[in-house]
Length: 220
Ligand SMILES: Cc1cc2nc3c(=O)[nH]c(=O)nc-3n(C[C@H](O)[C@H](O)[C@H](O)COP(=O)(O)O)c2cc1C
Image (cartoon, rainbow, N blue to C red; front, top):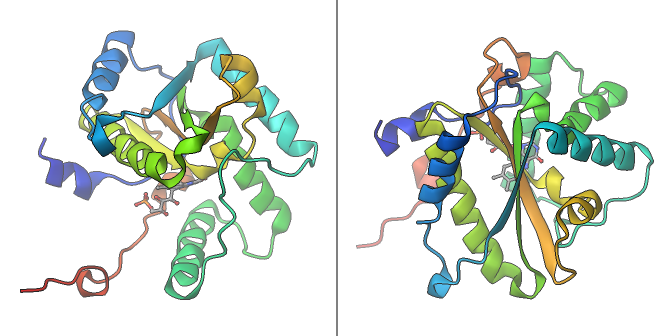
């Protein structure tokens, strides 16, 4: 499949069937993702992939943490308040998702339950956490973003869907505890992945994009 085809096909998937990706396919995909470019070839990504019992245990701990009502304590700053076009698009994406789920915008309880699905990894058989040394800041974040997109395209090429999740950087405690990550490392974000459940209502959500001219300026 061509990259352009993958780009046209892809969308964030938030409902998966209960079928793990075979180990050898997983390894091959992650091996390929190592070819991602990075600033000065620093390759700052450290990736933890949870599957099976470890994934279930992690989800249990994360959900318990979220439900306890303790505030999020991300390792990196995710506190931006979107403005203008960004805010409109943020609302647009939420409307598309809640629309697909049949959730009224004013139904806070239902929205909270939908949000909680993030830490249940949307039922995915696998979840990856993208971590890096905290001192790297924005320099490392760029590299991790590039890495994650390479990974998601490679997954897609293999018929495996994914959803990148900033939500998975909000409560790093359980990931830290289960991986033995160093104090100097932080969890930036994560990604649930697996085979799409085509019946899942959430997967009917399709976002749109701005006109090319709004985003890209060709100067000659
Ligand atoms: C860095 C990043 C963080 C994201 N965080 C979340 C998240 O926490 N939960 C979620 O359901 N989707 C999350 N998404 C998915 C976006 O909502 C989605 O990419 C966007 O609405 C465009 O839709 P599409 O991916 O289906 O084309 C995230 C995407 C990115 C790139």
